Length: 589
Ligand code: ADP
Ligand code: MG
Ligand code: ZN
Image (tube, rainbow, N blue to C red; front, side, top):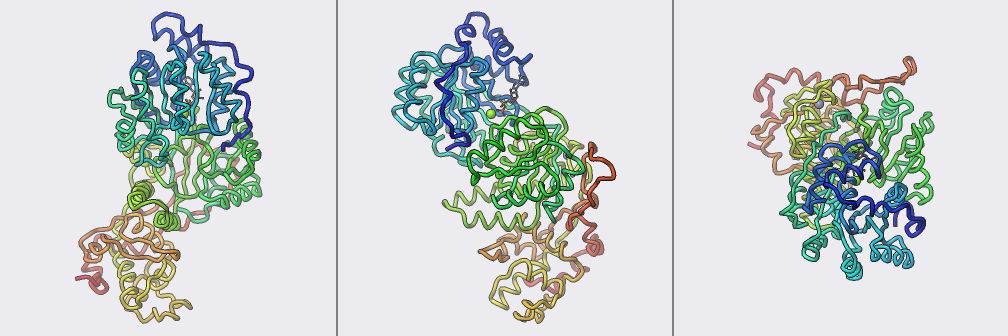
């Protein structure tokens, strides 16, 4: 099913044909330019579009890596118009096919689609158009190509090229693997003469390599655009009261702006949208649990109106093309850097300053590790999910420029950008080895002496020497580690737990999120490994272009973890482990 279930439009009211005209002679370059102006109404190609278009018109295969909003569609649409035959576009975005086809028909391109949302009659109509040579572009859901009937159909028509959009879906390593994509390797065997172009916005080196080999595109030319989106300011804030932090961001920097707020669950989408509305922000929810009509209404309001905020699960946004999205906010940690980059890439397609803001805290790490442990699929699958999460956590905990880290993840080198939170308010790293040892020792003690595992709450209570009901019940105050962490505050300890989890020096287990050691923990306990941690800057970075009415600012909610923390730790810096008295509670010798 799709977002827009209403069928129709495909067979009806085809626009004026451009095919004949576009295929008139002339140099391929000139023809491509001509189609760009006349059909699409654009002045010039962007970036490497022209090179790609000419390469494919000339019959070459191409692998195109270009960020979201870069203009990938034209790279196959124009060659489809210039080359004789129909361009067959494989896309997983079934929900958007109707819209894409409608938009193409509106400018006179003869386009159609085949997917599971159509009834037999509609499908027949499109098939007839294709066989009669009356289609410039045919969009196909990947599962159509597993049906021999579709393959037979394609055999009987004339194909100008195959475009494989969202090509990262073929990569098992990637964050959006779709088994149907694996079958696409047969395109080359069945139609060796037909050029193929694979396109994606999410291309780490691993994904890039996998696309090339799985789609048998060894002969292709590779076009790798810069993945930098310089107008987007990346910020990752310590999460304390996420909804209030979000409201503060919207009021001070994005009053009246259109934006997307991503939440993990449908429930939090609803709650957040409600909260924003109660606080005077024009916001609507969007998730797969909503009625299709409601979703369609909210989506089209977002596209048409100026300042609407959509609070959504990641079901929202793929393929949506709105140029003036001023901010993308994440209230929960994305599962991968690739997903995060794709989602934040929906901001600022018009090139104007925009914000990508993410709130991130301990609970995110606990929750996601738990989700991975409980996920279906084999061990290899879980390992992949864990590796994606690790990369995302490394981005959150970095003291380097966010953009440098992001681009490095996509295999591209860069220098500090001067326009991300870490560049604007550099965090410091501090030696958290001793607190790490205290915490890990407590975990070990509890397990050895109590034969039980405990969650963050009780472990922090023990470290801080709090005689809570639970502590007394389990006799925890009798432990030698009781109170050894009284010099730090609760928020500090939660920061320590979060960073240990992020660095895999600690792990969570089971439904109650109990803390357990990892293989790497021992090295820290033995004093053989230093643990560097990120200290939040005292003042989180804020965009210079803040434009809220002065005096109307909401009170600043400084996140607990961003407050001037770790005062007590200053004393430790510069001291050796021995001076710090480590051996007293380090239990591995
Ligand atoms: P992608 O698939 O890479 O995310 P799209 O193909 O959807 O990007 O294009 C994003 C937006 O950029 C669209 O609104 C498109 O019309 C516009 N666009 C693409 N190429 C050009 C160009 N050469 N000149 C002006 N606008 C362009
Ligand atoms: Mg696209
Ligand atoms: Zn930076």
